[in-house]
Image 1 (spheres, helix red, strand yellow):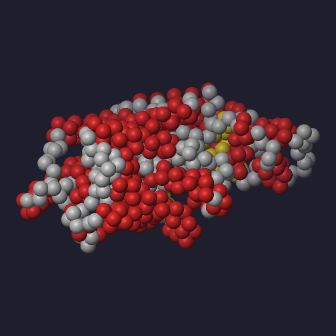
Image 2 (cartoon, helix red, strand yellow):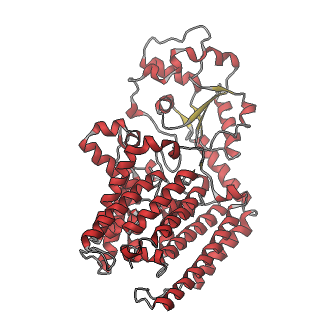
Image 3 (cartoon, chains in turn brown, red):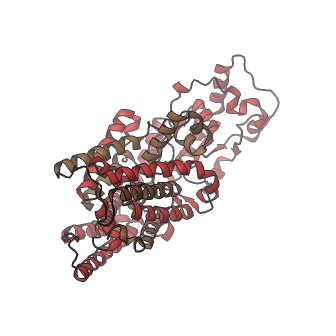
Length: 159
Length: 399
C-alpha cells in the first residue's frame, strides 16, 4: 500500500506540480463557514483574509477538489472492503461519549498545530518529505516526537 | 516538460485531475487500514508499525521516481512545489500536532477517509480540527513572531543543505528508510513475543524485490546524474527558448500593476534602462541595474518574482536568457517596457502626459494606484506563475 501511495503522490507532482494535502482544505472550509456567518470576520483577520477575502475564493482551490476526492476514494475502498459501518472506534476502556470528546480535543490540538506548522502529515510530512524539504523532515520527526512523548502517559485511552 | 499544468488549459480540468488524485489518495489510505484510529495509534504503542512503514515507503517511492525523472530531464524539479522550510514553527507545530494525533486518534487526511466510512470518532476529530484552525486564525497575531520568524529558509532541500547531488540524498534516504523498516519489524516481533497481543496484525513482509528495485533506480540515477547533465541542460535551454519565442514571460503592464498592488507576493523590479531615462521616470521601488551587473544578482530569493524593465526587446531577451540559463527562477520582463506602462495610463486616463522634468518615482504614474479602480482586472492575461505550481497556486496544507 505504501508503494501505491507513493505512486499517487508522484502522479500528483507530475500532473499538478504539487503534492497532496488535507488540512489546507479544512482551513478553507473553516474560512467559508466563517464567511457565511460573518464576512467581516474573514476580512478583518489576516489569516482568513488570505484564504477567502476579496479575490480569494476559499472554494476555488485545487485542495478543495482533492479532499472531496479523498472522501470519495475512502468511501469506495470502504465499500469494497465492507468496512463502511456506523461506529465509534475506541480503546476498550472508553465509553463512546468520552472517546468522542477526546477526538474533538485531539482534533483541536492537531488543527491548531497544522496551521502553525503550515501543513499536516499529508501536505507537510508526506509531500514535502518526498521532495526533500528540510522543514518537512523536521516537522515529521517533531510529529513522531510529540506523539511518542504523550503516548505512554495517555496509554489507557488505547490499551 | 513535466510537471504539467492543467490550470492553464481549464480550471475545471485541473479540478478534475485533483479530484482523481484525491480519490486515489483516499482509496489507498483506507485500504491500508488508516480509516481506523485503533490501527493508527498502534504505531505509538509499537504493536503495529504500519503507519511508519506505509508513510516511508510512499516517501521513498515518490522520491525515487522524482529523482529518476529529474535526472533524465523529464521533470523540472525546480518547478515542483516544495514546502517552504520554517524550522521553529514547523517543529513546535509538529510537536503539538503529534500530541493531538495520539489523543484524537487521527491525522487530517486519515480522518477524512474514516468519516467516509462512517466512523463517528473521526467526525469528532474533524469538528475539533475545524475548531483548532478557527482558533489559530484568531490567535495568529499573538504567535506571529513564531509563525514568521528568522528560521524561515524558504525553499530549502536536503541536497542544498548538505551540498550533495540530489540522487546521493535519495540513496541515503532510501537506505535510511530500509533501516527503519528492519528496526520497525524487529520491534513488532519483540512486542508480539512480549505481549502475545492479538491486536498485532500479521506481518505483510516488505517485498525484497521492491526494496531492491528502489535502491537500484536510486543508484542508477546517481551514477547517471553527471553523464545526463548535458541532456538536462539541453532540455532546460529548450524550455527557455520556448518561453522567449512564445512570450510566456513577457508580462503586460496590467499584470504588473496588479502585482504591485498585491501585498502578499514578494517581487522586485529591475530597471535596465539608462540612468537618464531612469531618473526621468521609473516605477515605485524599481532598482536600477546595468545589464552586466544583473547576472550577479543571486541574493534575491528564488520565489521572489523578478521583473525586468529593459529599453529594448533585445536587451530584455538577452538578459532573460542569461539569467534563466544560470538557473535563476521567476524572471519576467515587462513587454515593451515603459512604453507599455505609459500606454496603459493613457488608455485609462485619456490626455495623460508624463511630467517633463526628471521626477523618478515621484511621478504619480510610478504607482499602480495612479489608475486604481480603472483596471479592467477581468481582462488581465496572467503569465506570472506564483510560488509553486501553476498560476496563483500554493502548496498543500498550510495554504
